Image 1: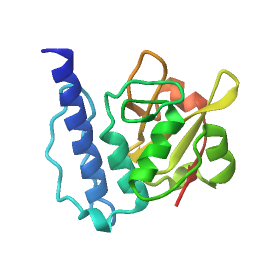
Image 2: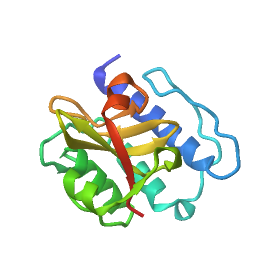
Image 3: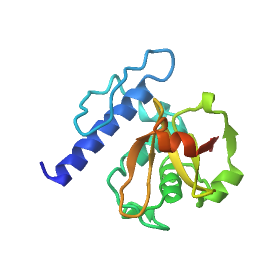
Image 4: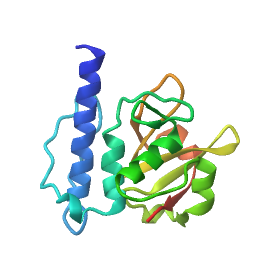
Length: 173
């Protein structure tokens, strides 16, 4: 299977996960769906777009960027850095937020880890400074533009690296 086909399969699986999470918001039980190259799942009932929160809409926009390359300073669908992806996703959801990780850190309202919602921003300390941000998807997963040579992808917040690097969350809405 070509890398393009794997990328497309990964995007489809990730979109299924986010639509499952979004549609399960409220009191319904969330059906767990693994993210990975072989993950296949049909979403449960999809919530109408206008009934989604701003954060949920931003998460959908961010997931549509899976596979887009990391570009330092990038904030378009031709390439993103981490804060550019987050800003782009929120702009697509109709909400303006600051452009850089440090501005997002300073200007957005902190949220406790136990209160995370889809669309919250996750901040990470890497190499001694708050230098990375991702967008929370629910189920302890987040989407981000990781680093040079990589692409927009979904990660698990509980992985050793991200669990140690996580500093706080913030809510832009």
